[in-house]
Amino acid sequence: MGIPGLLDSRSAYGLVSRILHWSLALMLLWQLTGMAVRALLGRHPVSAFFVGMHQSLGTAIFVLVILRIVWMLAMRGRRPDHGNGLPAVAAKAGHAALYALMLLVPSVALVRAFGTTRGFAPFGIELAPPREEDVEALVWLGNAVHGTLGWVLAALIGGHVVAVLIHEALLRDGTLRRMAGRTRNSTAGPPSPGIDNLQGRKDAAGGTDSYARTS
Ligand code: HEM
Ligand code: HEM
Image (cartoon, rainbow, N blue to C red):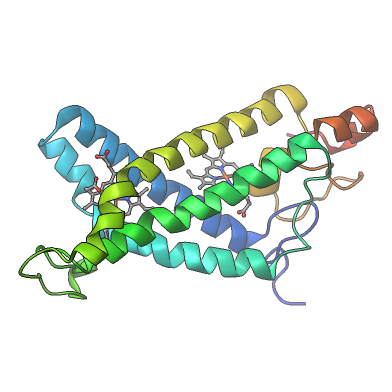
């Protein structure tokens, strides 16, 4: 049915989820690195190189995040399972927070962009002409939270990457492979116990070894 590996399965994320995950990861890291460089160097050609496209790239991120949410909902119930227990709840909450901020951070900036004296023209397409003065109802929320929530998102991404590294280095349960390895799990073995399901692994007592990396 269709192209194999396109959709998610219990053992691995499919191609569509991976393209969305890794392209957004790259774009978000670009946005955040750019703003970090700007905070360090101030007005500088290197900062300009990074943040010159901030609004356009941010708009593209917004569109991709909407697609990703639709896809996540469509794939619900057929993605790798996180199991039960506290670590699983933490993983699910972490992913939910990542989704919420990926949506919120560009959204408040977009609303603000429609109300400023600079106008708004992502990729050169004018969506809002410059206002004579800032429209307070549109700009206040962006002014209040866009930057701060952007840094909170950066911290969450840091935590997410550390969690993955712990899985790879200590638990060796094939977590990274679900998002980066083969789209179809060819190794025999039980379905993954799920990200962060430490208790599940203990219970499995080695039973998950057959799920360990083959490469
Ligand atoms: C998910 C995508 C985005 C991320 C991760 C992001 C992140 C950030 C961060 C971390 C800052 C620095 C705040 C500081 O200096 O402390 C910032 C500033 C800014 N961003 Fe974004 N941004 C995104 C999308 C957008 C979009 C879509 C727009 C406009 C349409 C935008 C417009 C701005 C502007 C004008 C500033 C400077 C003023 C301010 O700090 O609020 N950003 N962004
Ligand atoms: C930079 C921004 C990133 C964001 C916003 C992000 C977000 C997410 C989210 C929301 C999920 C849940 C699955 C989904 O709905 O797609 C996920 C899964 C995953 N991410 Fe990321 N991610 C980022 C970067 C990374 C990086 C750099 C790595 C590599 C170390 C990574 C490795 C993974 C892995 C292995 C999974 C699968 C975990 C599981 O089985 O549940 N991510 N990511």
